[in-house]
Image (cartoon, rainbow, N blue to C red; front, top):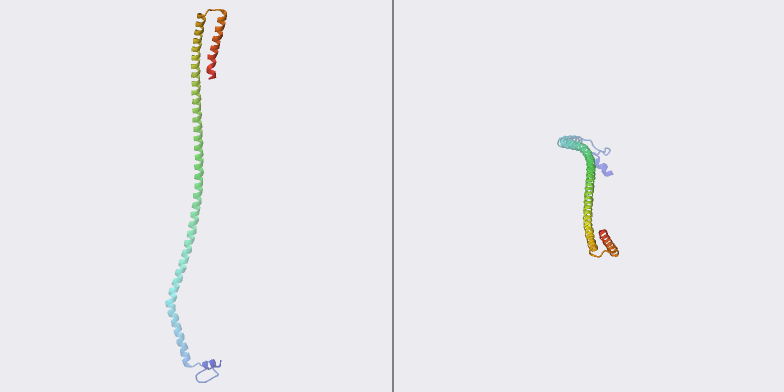
Length: 188
């Protein structure tokens, strides 16, 4: 510690003073203060203006980004609202399409049922007419068969000697033949 004291003491040898304030020290302090002030002014001119401009530009950029973000949020809100409206419209359109499809399906079902009923009625009427025609044909054939049988019976009756036993036997045979012909189509 003594060494430090000796270094800081004045050059003239006065050991009671810690720092010697002589003219050279005062000049150096003044020169240093002027140099520091000049350096401050130079740095202010060279650095403060550009730094201030950079900070100002950065502040403006941040302000613009915040404004863009607000606009973006507003646009996103509008887009979301538009999207929600679009989804609702799509749901309404889907419901309308489904209702239309159901209505068309019901109309087509009714049309098919009515067509099927008409065709069934036509088939029934045609079958009834065919049955009636077949019945008429069978009746005509039966009538012809009865006439043939009657004429055969008459021939047999006339050709044979007419006695009561032969007459009864021929009559029974004719009735049996007539029954066989009459009931033959019903069995087939």
